[in-house]
Length: 337
Length: 186
Image 1 (cartoon, rainbow over the protein chains, first blue to last red):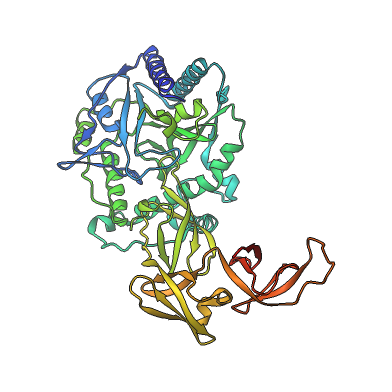
Image 2 (cartoon, rainbow over the protein chains, first blue to last red):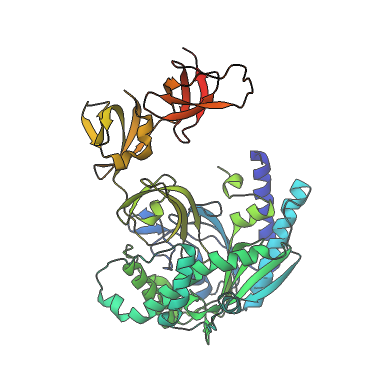
């Protein structure tokens, strides 16, 4: 695709998703990229911006602070940065389309994902004159924990402690050609106070990654390419910033053509639980010898004082969506560089 | 080194052995842990295996270096080479040279791989040019194109060559297969 075609594609695709979300009553916002703290999540490494600041890894906390202060439903097309994520479907800098509906439930934002995907595929088709990749004709929900059970033969519920999933993990490691390499770190008070939860988080995130690569991705690739798939029913240890109900996290992942596009949460509103999860990830970072990051105190204060209204939110990798809609092998070929 | 510094041709030390990354792919499921899926080759044995590392792991870079040498002389006790840059001599044990000794002729240029300062492997050029020193004459009248005969070159290596070749002819030989490639003029 030559430069002028790429410019037209981005122009119309950006206009398309903006129109799509505005039609739904969401307002566009633009929050700062240089942040004094980022949402500390497992395996997302921020890029420093000097003077003790970081480039945003997502606009999530800034947008949630707006929600706390009464913004109503909002969306943003944000430039975000994640260190060391390089590959055909990864880039250290990319566009995250993120939106929140308040009030909102998971089915509301799932429907938004479907609208945004349909609009972007339509833009690509109209621009190029023919369909380069099959657009999803219909969407289904698939329970992740059920797929885990089916593919592994383990009767998992989703809240098992690390020790119980260890045999499954050992099998996945062997199949993936991974060998356990323990990182030696001084065990601080923070690490010790979270030792059990940390072990669970480590085990579940590792199992999820290996299993996704070994089983989920091949399974998704085998499905009808015209089928959009929302993976729902995540184990509670993989809740990230979503609410938990019983053994399940209230979150979903949307996949098109075997590629993960979006993550959605019924957003966690409890400031104490939110602090506990951030501290747990801070302990995980320490365990892996990663540099310490400050807790996002201003966000936590807003959560405790003003309170986050009931809301559901989604983050969608916009470069990936464009790549899929145009049948592009990698994100580079569409970049406006 | 941190696993995020992995790339193609990175050299790693694993279980006391040097490995080179020949294929590299990064995948990261959603909010999961990044996986670095690699194919690696043992720089001594040539064995190839698939290995996956996860974000957060640390790896050890291999202390390896390849230097150019010239073959001087040798026999069953060892083979002596000279460093082209500082004229230093080094003797390699027969186990290390293995079957490659069949191609070692005067002044042959080779690459020697050092791991932690110790020689661990030798790489020959892909082909060598040697002279036939012994061979039966071809049978008169036998003109079939695929007929070959044994010929010995100066290192003692026996090669199957076309029947029309004679003692004193120079031939190009593949060091990988040990097979005759073509006759070289002059």
